[in-house]
Length: 510
Ligand code: SF4
Image 1 (cartoon, helix red, strand yellow):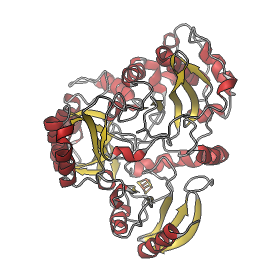
Image 2 (cartoon, protein in one colour):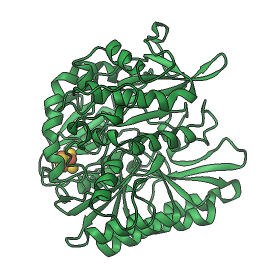
Image 3 (spheres, rainbow, N blue to C red):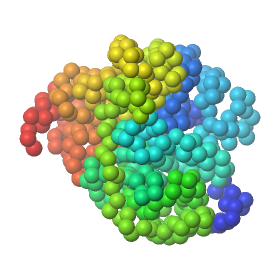
Image 4 (cartoon, rainbow, N blue to C red):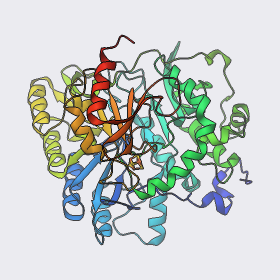
């Protein structure tokens, strides 16, 4: 990438910088074929959608697809089984419901479709589903999230970013997913005069919990670069329930510096332009840039885009997020910051919703919530702003719709990719096998079933992973400091043998 223009980056750009990078990822305007039909991915701002939009998705999936909707591990939704010849009608229905990117209109010419498709691809900002409501949060990230989404969609140059390029904005909520590597992460931290956002590149905010994972990630990052690139082809062949960044490890940096909340959007803008200035044409992720440029070089270039100081702060070298996150808060009922209001959540089995279930959730949101739903990066659903007196009724309704509301339930502790019914790459029917395993899953054990090493269902390393090697046959991995799935501890297990072994492991003090 050779073009530099510090004052106005978008005013003098190479053709390459303006061209969206090729992608096999599904999007709203790019329906990708899979074994069970097309996949249409709907990116949701902060995981949020209105009840009317949820009902519209349910109806569109019935009319134009297989009536199956997945919650992805980036808190988006995707419609599976889109029927041949129905693609345009599906897209039109979704765009008409306000689910498209900012430039989208209900009647788009080719140029508008190109522009909207590029803007759609890069709407990747991960936040807590309880942002603005979590009483433990240091900062309400809701306005900043809107600012970042506007930034990503508002500058033509950012169309050159990979659809996998993603940001994490952590307001310090207890309900937060912090173990997915992001190209840029920002995390609120207390300061003597308020709050600052520390930031880092190509990794996760440091926590006590992810220290081991990060160490493994650092060691493995270079070794997995090629595998991640190869996996793009598999993505085209059939997609699981994930639109997370597809490489579960990253080079990662520790906290580099801190900025004021009012400087966050400018900082991210500077980092995005810096990435596009410096990255080679085949470098799609921040970790690729860090393989060829030092952190200091990146910050020096970013400095040219902002008028506040931007250099590495050595005092933050050992910064860790103060409060631990708790994923269990995504399920059941939990009080919000405003007294007398609660968020209530449930886990659809393996992240899949029938259209009728999504319609039921929309009705519940209209009746008891604020008319909106939140999808979460655990592939679950959260209803915000429930009044105290309605909590029990909402929990009962969620359970009636088939959602698990207790973190101890087996279906809250299992994830699985699309498997052989949806993906040509899969060596097993992971969805059906996961449901069979649920009947024998030991207490306290979390398991990820993956049809191939691509790991579409998990951008993190699960405590245990069953990696398919043949129909109904899996290798068992246990998370440790090793890269990818951890260490392989048993080969070619049947589901029954895997259940036996997990029971033994659950009983073992080691
Ligand atoms: S088999 Fe599963 S993990 Fe592999 S590409 Fe298909 S959906 Fe993804």
